[in-house]
Length: 378
Length: 181
Image (cartoon, rainbow over all chains, first blue to last red):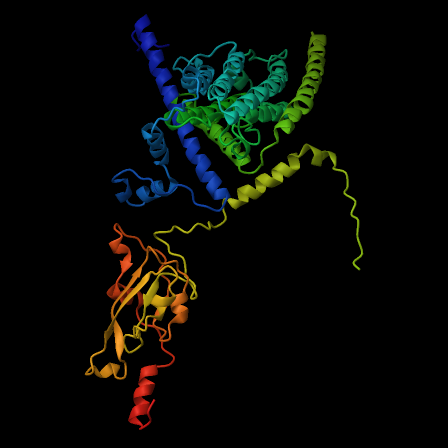
């Protein structure tokens, strides 16, 4: 399969590290540009124009193309990143230094770790075999994602606690409470999906994300089969990524800046990037599970050829879906007002959790019925 | 007396209690807003239209014949609440034909824009209609001295304004007709 590549352990390791860097680069770029998208989309929705002044030297003089890039604010993320890097680093005297420095890293690392199991396309080899494009296509993919992504809340809780400020503290408490209440609904909403994917008579099954994506090839997408699961998962995803209408930890109108009130310069930047990296990864995972991943449209076979062009188109299609979901996140943020804290808890515990349980039981019955009918045929 | 009408609020239907249709309506609204024309004024490139009665930077104006209107009566200097105006009075030479009957004119006229509060009292008090707060709204400088507008600067900013009276022309005509003023 990989005859042209020299063999050897060190080479394998180097290759993996190289791929890992590429993946981190891609996700971080997307996170940076989703910040720009957030600013632009919010501006358009509010009748403003958004950032349109930043430009690299000489780019302005390229006819048509240069002014267009400037107008779209393409260089704004570079300027924003540079700003975070060069700002004065202020550490308030009343913070717990060790945890104060640790918290942004703990927030960022889980956001970047989940991408290891994220499949984003498939590659067609010359001998007809197909393999998934992912850093590590784990058999327990989705469990790994759940396990690691919920660690992100430790960064926020730690930031809130170590800041020694009442606003940060409240933000941290809200974050952990919210995380506990929505994690349950999120996990339960996915159980029927796996029941369905692993139902008898299917060709692709398993807990790995690529198996879920491939099970939707040529058939219905899973959000068509299980709309309620998709809805609950989406709502829980909004809560998990701390996005409006559930941005309790940050809620700038009542908590100043929430958990990052005491943070500035690059440490704030890391929190910021972590939040958007969560959104990017969350959108990608929703795409893989409910929107067919890199497969074309529901009930249609992939129209692209089984070679490298097909791989590229598949990855592009996957990216397009992910970007649409990121846009959806932004769209929701600038449409809905924030819930009150007690309403968030109420929605999580007494609405979403029973709904997810009921959904699970209904699909349990359906899948059992299918199981019985197929086994009766034998 | 107005009749009180009591409206009974209907209980919310199931779809209303899920909020989902309302959320979709909201999403539609925000989405259609994305394509509406923008209201932002791109400031340094695009300037706002200044209405006529705007109280901008005080300026000195000339009449349509290009003659100085200020006669340095110093009323504006007197009325100015923050004492931003300083006038050094001077006289108009006898032999200046286009300004016959005008006895005085400012030798120097300074308005300190660091002191000016844009109240418009100077414009209101001026008997010669020589000082106007016009459409200039942005003045800046690197030093305190730069922020003091001198006479040349004030006339440059002011330009000419239409004159309804031609007071000094009337006086001249009256005298040439044999009447004292």
